[in-house]
Image (cartoon, rainbow, N blue to C red; front, side, top):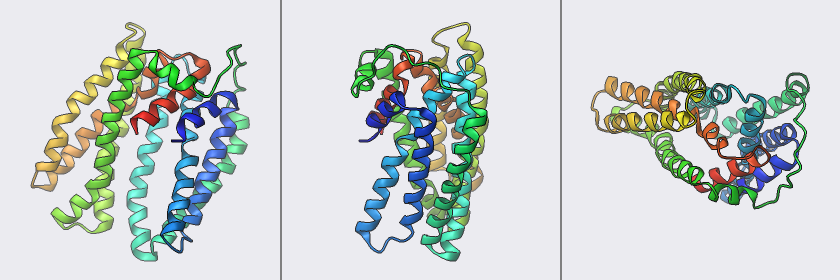
Amino acid sequence: LCVPLSGYVGDVFSKKKVIIFSLLLWSTATFFTGLSAGLVHLIILRAIVGSSESFYAPAANALIGEKYQEKTGLAMAIHQTALYAGIIMSGLLGALIAQRFGWSTAFYFFGGIGIVLSFILFIRFKKIILPDAPQTAIKVTLFDGIKGLFQKKTAILLTLAFACMVFVNVGYLTWSPTFLHEKFNLSLANAGFSSMFYHHIFAFLGVLLGGRFSDLMAKKSIGARLKIQAFGLLLGCPFIYLLGSADELFYVYAAMGIFGFFRGIYDSNIYASLFLVTPPAIRASVSGAMIMFAF
């Protein structure tokens, strides 16, 4: 519900400030979630986490697209690897912390790290990010994101594909640790780590290769990024079936890895493809609209 507003904010205000604000509020709410004394407290704080998180992706991806116009695929692929690395580490650390110190400590730990990181970004953004490009004469309105999305058939199809991938990814992230724990009797910590590690370490490789390759191919064909995404989705499908049906851990882990590799190829151009049919002035807004409909 919040990402259309978040995308609009990312287009009309400084993207750097929006990113820092998002991370700080997101992390603070995560930290205080550990103090929840009941279900209502938990719901309210998780709602703040979700709403503040929504401000990050539209602004961040629009900023990357603005700064790295010739290497958009690779730049966004590098950014995406941070998500994979974070998921791998949280799968291990979250389970270990919760097992040994209780669930509240996990929220304190990750929320605290985020608060510290937001202050580091505040300092570093001034030094390593060039000033924002001058704003165009286009006046951005709250509904430009949704209008920009539905005015382009390519953007609509990209959103539908993204929704399908989100459906699969969220199912995988939610189900795979429990699957390993229940079917193969792995400990919670082992199941949490293994379900995230094999998939995302290969996704790490796939997203970098996909981003680099798509930048090269995009110079030859305008539709290359979309074809590479379709290729990644198609080849990943059989391995999703295999990881759910295999009875030996080796084949489960192999399927997780290969599925992750092709998922990474798709992920490398989620926003780079969208930006092909989106004016620079409303990229954050259109990104927000796509995220809303996909999720």
